[in-house]
Image 1 (cartoon, rainbow, N blue to C red):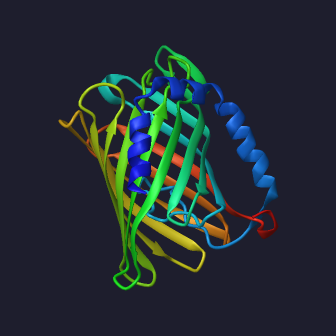
Image 2 (cartoon, rainbow, N blue to C red):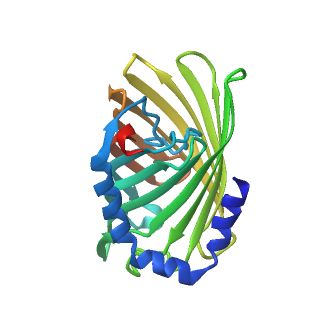
Length: 274
């Protein structure tokens, strides 16, 4: 399992492989969507949205989960205004085994600043989540998530170089209705020293279907510039495999705010197709 993570990080340096993958990514996304028609709904849903804290949960083998949403973010630093609208943002999660999950993030982005307006598909992100520990006796879970950013977007929307994001993911059950989760990570986006990232979320069940969370989160840009943000939101379980969400966030020591809406559904492969 650890060899798989090392293998993906090694492949990060192999430009030919990723150039090939970028050219064929649209076909891959289409195949994923077509395959979903042979799946049926099953089991409870646990999502990685709408908070910034990733869940240590990995999907069961053969399960597919799609988390889609809309996000509007405004940044007014240095007397300049910048707006980003992501619609839709789509995270595809697939259970390779019960402890290894494959992930693909694809989103359409619209950026507006004082003088420019650009839109298109953002850089594609491919990831692997690995369950390291699940101990029900002490109510703790630990996972590792590694994501590779492929410069597949147009120049104005792209990093124009490969990036990588790694996170250690932790969660603790505090009571039958309340849980605590936090992430610690490092992102390298093609230049500088990279960014340390952190999140800390507490979530609770208000009713059997309605959940609430709040969290501080942020990063240390280039290992020097400390950024602190805060967000909170709600989730609503329409069915055991179908969830709605909304959230709002803002900068504490910076002039940023965002609003998001989302919908997620879990589908498990029909036993006849397994």
